[in-house]
View: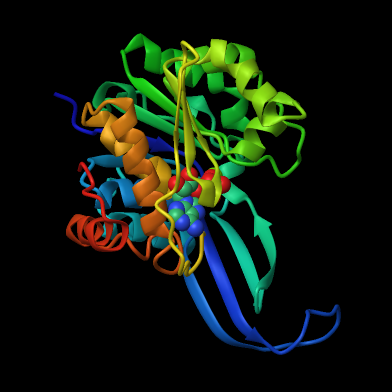
Length: 317
Ligand SMILES: Nc1ncnc2c1ncn2[C@@H]1O[C@H](COP(=O)(O)OP(=O)(O)O)[C@@H](O)[C@H]1O
Ligand SMILES: [Mg+2]
């Protein structure tokens, strides 16, 4: 019996969100914003928080600085029920993103900080003993982890730990991941359609799927926004599942991470892949009913009620 269902390995940062800004920033001038929220950012944190809300036992492996933002990250994760014993405190400050909102548009400025420097040697090897599953995310925001990806995957394989991978978008758009050697060691690959095409350099989604199918560990879930998702198994068989369409989307921030949280929570419970896919589509849809990535995931009870009342489906968690 493992202590954790899921260890999430990923980036951590703080979002400083400014609203009601009088005009765009200009060098040499002082401008004012009406509102500010300082909150836990990072897509892997959204995944971890929501998987915990769905009832999975989750711990986080990530790096923060020895600073007040690091304390904010730690206490925010703990408040969401995520175990922080494997957080690493390093000499590099905790990363932060300043999000300047201008109506529907936004300008972001990110200091990556500690997420830039975490590599395999920083990770407590006990993680691979205590967790039954490892979820890796946001690889291109973590250059040292990306460099060490084979060591992480080999450590997981040596202990029979299953692995899911959501690379997320590469801001540099160079896609320096040798997917031919990496994907066979990944149990569940969780890209969205744009990322899958960019990673493989194929001009059509169909060609990208054909390229990676023989490389899959067990399966891939391709996330297709409001069109739902496509489950592809290693043997090439596919299941397409439309979204549980939400016609009153508040925002889609974190929908992919919430979909991952539902999919993986169902997987670690031993549910069949089709049930995992349905759970992922449901939790992706639930995500869009409230602001931000975690707003709708206040409790499993609340998520169950939303699935039944808004989407007419019983979630299998
Ligand atoms: N408007 C929506 N209504 C219902 N479900 C949605 C909507 N947008 C996204 N989803 C669900 O969330 C999943 C993940 O969202 P997606 O935007 O594809 O991920 P990513 O954020 O990684 O690009 C989708 O596969 C879908 O099931
Ligand atoms: Mg995503």
